[in-house]
Length: 294
Image (cartoon, rainbow, N blue to C red; front, side):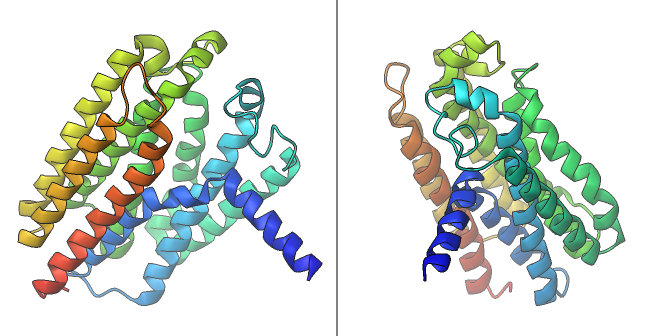
């Protein structure tokens, strides 16, 4: 019983280190790509399984790498000093082992999805790992992160259909602008620390006010991309209803945060954004199901 509790505690600790719960941001977009691709090509359940495992493994490897590379910075930042590596809950060697195992799982599952996915697996991993260094030399780090995560639905589409399409790139554009926008919001919490540490982020370099304005602009563009999915995929009125709800949540997210009060960022970051991702998937799924597109 004690061993089981210890194993569970260790699992939860690793889950917190890589923010496993944040998988909810990208996975619904991947599932959206799956159900949309299912209209064009037969999809085997095992293929979907490999795609989901690959996404989780790639994210685990990338997050573990980020935590390892940023351990010293996290230790110096009061907000992040309690994270698992700087606080000593997870040893750097253990984090490295997790990164290696997750990378191997990703490469294996990518290979199971076909030669193209196999050949792209290592370049994709290197691109994901590269994000961890961007904050050291460019304020475009938020856009790099958005692009890294936005590759997920496009990659799923390629694994299922064997090619890219403009339609799925629009879906990835939704995720790109969504992620980049709320990462800028999230970085506002560390603007002072980043400035002192010589790190590059939009809030630390351009100021909180400009960062909030840019985040709003990106989420406004995100809303336009969401509505572009309607004609691109031939969706119906149910999707439009969900799209309007999502736009309302984007507005709510920005009303929760202002230049003088950033306390609403944690709630806006996780709760509101996770609901947005889930609503997009549910809206697409219900629209296709009621329209008998599945």
